View 1 (tube, rainbow, N blue to C red):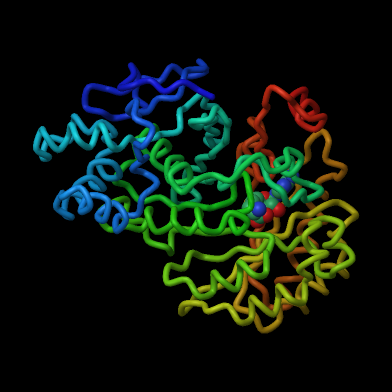
View 2 (cartoon, rainbow, N blue to C red):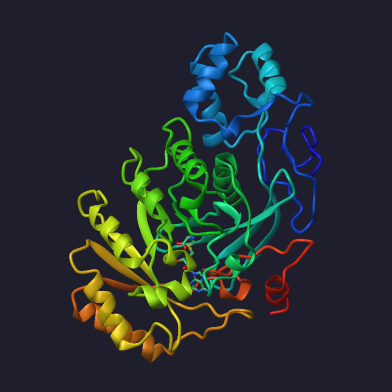
Length: 391
Ligand code: SAH
């Protein structure tokens, strides 16, 4: 268990976080958590819940809006620094609430500008988030779990297994830390839930995080700027189709039939290709919106012309776009990246059949920040993690 430090040194006088963190140093987790065991992490709360908790304490509901403004718009995490709140209220807030913020442990920059952030959570667990500049927008690739239970055969994160779900506050916390550290607070950015974890396997916290990110008094992030990527957990996908707040949807398909997909994405043995495609056909899409189908290309495995033709047939009648992701190879991953010719040939077959195709540029491979390369070394490292570490 990491120690909590009250108002620790890395909080600036204005209460902003991040500015003075010594990169690469392992520090205790910094929060302003009071000693009381009942204190609530305020960043786990949607505004309506915070309003209720404040009302229970006889505090006006509009204070919740002010608190959201301070934390999400101004990056202030110390109640003391929230100068438009009466002093007495600030003191009460500081004894009843705290702002848990993931701590930046390391930051690595790729030659292509991509940056990988290693963040430590309150219990000492670590996750990675990635900043991808100019795609053309600035994009944050955010994790939803520590590790992942899906065990896709080509993905390093899958080798970690699932250590735990992230809380909504930890999911949003990655966005707060990246925006603050990169000087992007108040600027537009996109979010892709494509970091560690399967977002629909942590449904409630992921959706709560989206509601907090979307709050007009907070970051006011529009859902058209958010993409949720999933292997297609069917019951959760159905649930998502009824959400009032709807992010863009990306499905990690990777194969056009059950035999092949079952090998690559084990959960396919439970929720097969036909069911996922049927759910996609039913999925309510906004005007002009399309579902992205991600397809990791593995040399000699799923990159044959007949796979492309089968994929094109499968997607007929769906408002879709296909995102081809040439494998980011890694030690411990038993596949190779196809040749550029094979990638081109595959894409051409899809395009000739009227599909919109893009090939994902692999960003940040030199710092292992690319798709499927996020893995965090723990004290008890698995074989795969050790393999990854010696790459
Ligand atoms: N669990 C979700 C979110 C992770 S997104 C999902 O599977 O969609 C990460 C994306 O990168 C997925 O499309 C995943 O299949 C892909 N990916 C995983 N490992 C990869 C690798 N080694 N090379 C390229 N892409 C990979």
